Length: 186
Image (cartoon, rainbow, N blue to C red; front, side):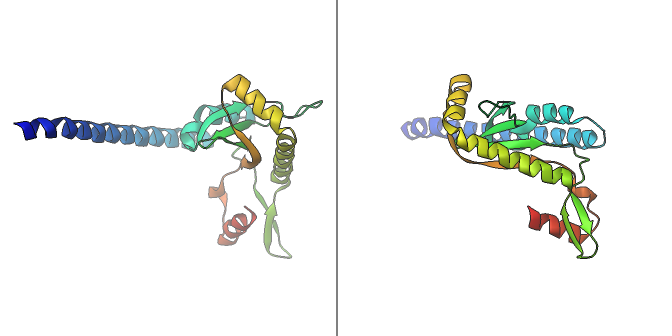
């Protein structure tokens, strides 16, 4: 009887924890499957960039689970206006910058004489835009850090944010060379 009294509470607790983890994993998988189906439907539409920004803001913490917070349209410049679509706080309290373009944005152009793909001008513009945002954030790191702490209650490190551009649809690539050159460019 004494052995059972010692064994049962721990056993029941571990079984309960296993059941909770199983339920949590099942729920996450179901949520991701539903989100994938919803995203697939949305990709077939011609929504404006603003619609995509709202959609991503609503779902980014599910889509990319390494982030704990999305900060929308924060002015990162002093004496000027620079508004990245989102700044994302990572699980280890660093800052990333996310710029969103439409899924029908053409990613690559082809140079026939050299047989290479290169960034489409719209993507090239987004790249320099994000690089400028990164520069502004680094230059005003203390102000950005203080603003996020004061307004969102998040202590973070502003150290060379990563720039992420969400654009286009690689399923539209028609050749292995196009996929390979895209990989080289990223």
